[in-house]
Image (cartoon, rainbow, N blue to C red; front, side, top):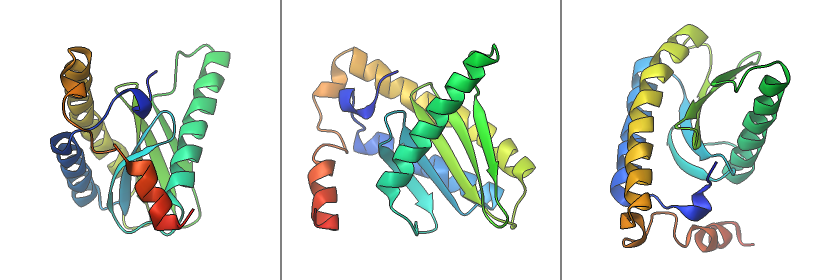
Length: 163
């Protein structure tokens, strides 16, 4: 698996990802949707403002998905393509995107896990197409020519949080 350190997201790719997230939220009535890479970097989000540290959440999401991949292997499955965590008021649904990223959908009682699961299925297909196009360009050397959206993001995050 490859993390964001070896590829970058162009502005047009980020726009497409965000549009797919916004459509998912509108169709499912979920609160928030995020895309996290497998190394724990937040790539995009849409919906309600996050009330927690997005960097910590992204890191924990990647660790959760990785741990569950190991559990899947222990029971003879190659992987779990999706995970569901149900809380009293808030729940989250996680789905693999192109074996490179994780789609996270946060939702409450305004919708059901069935509706979220249904709408996530199409969104994963749409996002996978975007990621495959990005990786196709990167493997042809096209990705290195244009500066990516995440270039310099670490410095900007440090400025925001004063670290």
